[in-house]
Structures are given as structure tokens and as C-alpha cells.
Image (cartoon, rainbow, N blue to C red; front, side):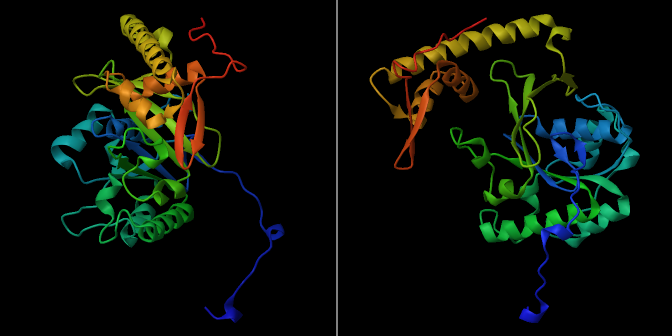
Length: 331
């Protein structure tokens, strides 16, 4: 670029606008959202249920009525005829509004112009790529420069068409790593995404799933949502636990959760009684007893553990006498 071609604008020439939402505050229009989770956690079932409701204008847990929209769902891991189509049928989706790009005719990558063309031709308000790691082409998934280039191009297409883009991705096996750093690939993927959602499976009940909002650049974080997937693959939102038909499910879930949290808290206090320890070491010790990372975090917060960073390493310690050790289980 020649210096004569450089254009500089002032912000007083820009008219401010509001962010549009496909589903507030989880999925913004014209932006990239990352949906991540371990294999088998239910993230694909969650996004298919979401697509189904959006194509028919049905309510999501926010209770907002919407106009039906068109969607592009691109998936490389499951067969279209024997897996994906039956899932959409089970979710009662309007399949006339759900399109896909045929991959038997050409290979696809995230920065392929065909995605932008498909959005325009199908008048899509939502593009889902599941999993996005399968569509990076010749690029290096761990390369900052490669993924930043791809994400920027995809972001520009989303913005120009006002289409929400959801990238479904797998997590690494680093269970004790901070959630935002667990995504498979360069950190720039979640850095450039405006919203990051994470699906987790309950360790106490295989049917229970949790949707957690772990990053939001455009609003406050949304509340944690709960849903179930039964043995037949039927999806059900749990929007009001007091109204769950299977009340015993809630009672069992609550009692097991409380019991495990108490055990985790006792172990943490025991391990830290002689002084600070590395947080990763505490996680490993407690999780080795069969307690999940999510339960350890809850116990840590209830105890009021003090986190400190020394030479790039995080340590945990018990509250000081001045801070006092709080009552763990208040009604």
C-alpha cells in the first residue's frame, strides 16, 4: 500500500449501533461463537436442537418468540443420511430450511469463498461448522498467523451478511487447564470469537449436560443452562428444576453433588493444612479419588481458597485467620 492510499477516519464520523442477537447473550448475529466440549459431551446434539427450534421459530430457554430462519449446517464427522438427518427429524426441525454444501464435489476449508456464497444464496442467518478443526485445509491449526487469518476472513463474512457463525470444536485432554485454553488449536480461535460456550457432561448422571458461557465480549455472561439427553437421543431442556417430571433425578443429583463437594472440600483443606500447594497438584490429588474437576472448583469457591501466582505458577492456600474460614454449607 502506498502512503497516498492510506485513509484515516475519526470516530466522530461513525454512527454507533447495537449488537443483534440470534440468542441473547449466547449467540450474536454477524459474529463468531465457539461451542466446545469433549467428545460425547452432547455439543452436536445441543446445536442440532438449537437449529431445530430456530428453523421453526420456537422458543429457546429465554422464552423469546422468533421468526423462523434458514441455517447451513456443515458436518464432516457423521453420515448425512443415517445420522444427521435422523437427528434433525427427532428434533422436529424444518429440514427445508437447513442446507449443507456437498463435500463429495469439492473439499472445503474455513476460508473458502464458497461459505460466503452459500450464506448469501441460502439467505442463512446461522452457519454451523462441526467440527471446525476438520475444515482448516492446508493451514496449521496451532499456528497463530494461520488461524488469525482464517478467523478474520470468516469474521468479515459473518459481519457483511449479519449471519451468526458457530464453530463447534473439540477440547484438549488438559483437564486442569483454564477453560479458554482447552480448545484444540491456537488460542487466537477463542480470542477472536465474541462468545465461547462449553458443554459438559455430568459425572454423576450420564444423562445430564451443562451449557456454560465462559467468554462474552459483547455482554455479560449468560447463566448456566441444563439439559438431558436420554438413551434414545431425545433432548430435553431443564428450564425449571422444580418442574422436572422426574423429581427423583433432581434429588439424586443434588444429594450426590453435595456429598462429593463436601468430600472435595475436606480433601482440599487436608492437603493445604501444611501450607500452599500448586493448584494443579491439588487438582490431581483430589481428582485421583474419582471426584470431577467441576466439583473441585465448587469446593474451592465455597472454602474461599486464596489463589496466588509465583514465578508463573498458581498456588492455593487456605484463608488466613483475618480472612477466616467460612461456613462451607449454608442453607
